[in-house]
Each structure stands twice: as C-alpha cells, then as structure tokens.
Amino acid sequence: MAMEQPAEDKPRNAQTVRALLQLRELILSGELSPGERVSELGIVERLGVSRTPVRMALVRLEEEGLVDCLSTGGFVVRKFSAADIADAIELRGTLEGMAARRAAERRPSRAELAEMRDCVGSLDALIRRRDFGIEDFSDYIRLNDRFHSLLVELADSAVLKRSIERIQHLPFASPNAFVLVQSELPESREILFIAQEHHRSILEAIERGEGARAESLAREHSRIAQRNLQVALASQDHLDRVPGASLIRLGERT
Image (tube, rainbow, N blue to C red):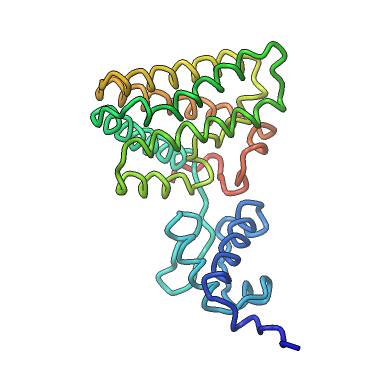
C-alpha cells in the first residue's frame, strides 16, 4: 500500500496556488487587517503549507497590490484611500480604451466579433426583463465580465492583456467591483441601460474600425464605476457590499 505523500513533497506550484487563494481571501475578508504585518511563519502554521509557497504567494500579492513589501523585510497588508481606488478605476478605463482602439484598428472579422455580438445580445435581453431583480444582477455580472474579457482578447496584445489583468486583481478596479452597490439604487435600471448602450456602441465602433471613438467610449464606460464608488463611499451599508471593503480607509487621501 502506497504511503501518503508528505505535504512538503507535493508539487510546489500547487501549494503556492493554495497559499495565494487562501491569503487573498484572508485579506479581502478582513481577517488580516490593513496595516497588519504578515508573518510568514504565522501564515505557514495557519495554512498548513511550507514557507517557500507562502513567500511566493506574498510576492504575487505584492504584484497585485494587496500587500506592500517593507524596507526592513516582510510584508504588510495594504490600505486603500478613495483616491487610490479612483486612480485604479481610471487606469483600467485608460487601458481598456487602448484595447478598444487596438481592436478597432485590427478590423476583426465578423467571425471574430461573433462572441461579443452574442454577449451584447444576451445583455440586451437581460436588462429588458420586466421584473429585473437583485438575483438578475448575478447574470449581469457574469455577462459584463465576459464582455470586458472579449474586448481585451480582440485587442490581440499580450502586453495590454497582462496590464489589464494586473490592475483588475485589485479588489476595487474590476468592471464588476461596484455593481452590487448599483443594484440598490432607485435609478439602477437607468444606469444599466446607459452601461449597455456603451457596450453596444463600443461593439459598433470596433465593427466600423473607428479606433478613436471606441477608445473614447471605453474610457467613458469606466466612469460608471467612478459614480458607483462615490455612492459606496457615502454609505457604510453600501460599502459593506463591496468585496474587500475592510481595506478602504475613508477620509484618507493617500
């Protein structure tokens, strides 16, 4: 009978992925507080993995912007001001604008645009539901994420793709970061219709090869997230619906 393989002999990359996912969850759930120093040995004991995968996971989280590396060694959980979050959203909008322009300039074929066209059609059908409720926002989040992913793919730029993926790892910069906040607003349907008009117009601009228009529309589209950020910051109840809200320090500019 074969003996169970010791934890230290398991593939190192598997342990790193496990440590990364668990550490990210500890941070986003608030179990590790902003400003708290992260002890490698403490995390090793807490997660039951060896020290090297923990170290590698912390380095990855530093790249994602969730922890900072101290000059004296070690890592500390990062805190975010409202200005930090606004800058991250603006940067995403800028990068997605570049992706939209690049996609339009490529003049993709109808076949290449088929998935985005289907996605926009599904979004159209969804937001026109007569009894659109909170449960429908889950479908919206999924389709919205799909639209933004397809936009990046159409740009066909490995550099842009890596840059956008990196900025979206921040808990407040992704296209869906503040959608659940939006769901509680009286004008939520109106906001959805505006966002969907952006989606349709971006697709149209790409189809027509209108690079400057596609870029402008994609950047304007990110402004919806900026608006929802202000709504979230104005109400603790709204803010609590944002993943990673414990990392936000209200009233701090940096």
